[in-house]
Length: 329
Image 1 (spheres, rainbow, N blue to C red):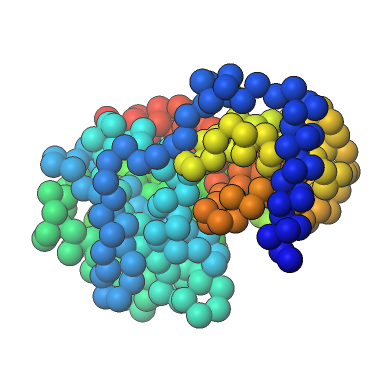
Image 2: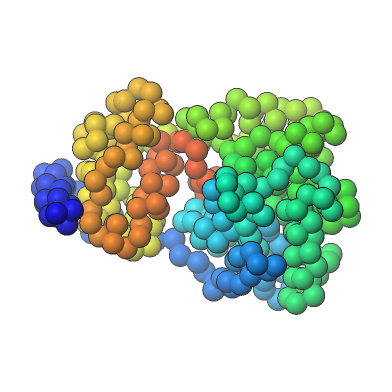
């Protein structure tokens, strides 16, 4: 029964695509799927998943911190994270991504405790760093950077400050869609150069709080930049960045999303309330192949980026790369 419904939906969507006159071949020529430029190593450390890559003589090492409900592997293999990592890997960086200790409830990092011994996340990361130094080309003096999303954004500020205070060479961090951790604020604010990024329609972690953190960081004399993602017209190219989605499927996805009533025929959002729009967009009946190939979550992430909602994005990679390069030449 479900297969019949999806088949009929796909037939209707194909008609919509054909009627709209999309040029699938042209789309394929201008947008390529984002895939890792190197082979990621999948392992475990103390029972937690670890996704990593460490080159010979790394320029720097990037620690990744996922958001609530996420995992180290999922964050490291997201399309936009891969896009970011490809740039840094090309410049000689390595990276490591593991999961928060809390894995039964919200799967969040402990960002309220600044102790490297009693905070289970900070303590395990200290041990992971020692393990990497002992078993890979990473050295204890290799510059470190951090990238965190949402709850991971708060945590990257705590990680950066506590590690730097303890003598680890943390040089720069990227706090995406999340506030500064309270212990950092209480101790006087960030002292590590920081990229703050947000999205204009983020109702999960509103931009105002991110902007306040940015201003406080500047007032403390710490270098920082502030980046805000804007809403975009709904088109097929963002979906072509997802490995496994071809031009026909990308156009079908756009047609399915428009069919929810959130966007008009030109791809402009017409549902005024962004939270209602996000929820309504999630009801789209995507092509059956998207579900079969396990790509529905990637499509949801790309749609959130189009809407400038709560989602990690690589669109400011050039600015971030330049900022990182100031502190890790």
